[in-house]
Every structure is written in C-alpha cells, then in structure tokens.
Length: 124
Image (cartoon, rainbow, N blue to C red; front, side):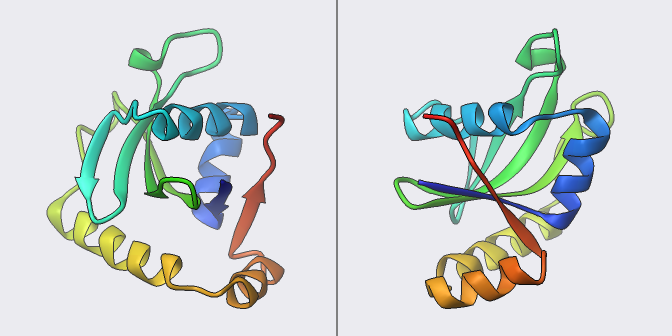
C-alpha cells in the first residue's frame, strides 16, 4: 500500500502538526475496514486525532483510497471549522480519484518529481 499527500494537504498537516505516523494509522484503519465515511467513487473521510487528544476532537481528512493499492490525502479540515464538504467538492474529489488511480507508475514519478504530491513513508 502506497500513501501520498498533495501539496495543500502537506501544508495543512504541517500547520496542524499532523505527522506521517497519524496518516499511516488512518490508512491502516481504512485497510482494516474501519472507514469513518465512504463517500463513494474511491473517496473516504477519515479522522486524524489532534496531538494528545482523541480522534473525535481532531481533524477530518478526505482520502482518495483504493484498498491494497494507493491512498492520497487531498484535503484536511478541523471538525470545529467545517461540518462537511459540499457536493461540488465531492464531485471534484471523485474525478481526481479517477485520474490519480489511472496513472501509470512512470506518470506518478513525474508528479512526485515536481513535488505536486509526496509519498508518505510508514514504519510497518
């Protein structure tokens, strides 16, 4: 399972002090079938806990997820700051999921080279 984050999610994670271990744990939960919300079209919503607090008071992340293959963290928000994503945003995330999951490895490497997305390395 390969895990990635886009540039805007990386900025969000840095500002909120979300480390890679928290992202890895969110994907591990999804792989185990513990998905907080399946939004369809390979788009899920997963909770990410705040440091020293529980997941219920933490952050929400939109993840483009295909079990056993790849996960892309593309959007994050605080539960207190936003209830949910809009329908037009969901539609855009579903389209992005189609595009990203259709990429060949060589195309993915090009995107990583220009730092549009970065790979998250998990300690297994």
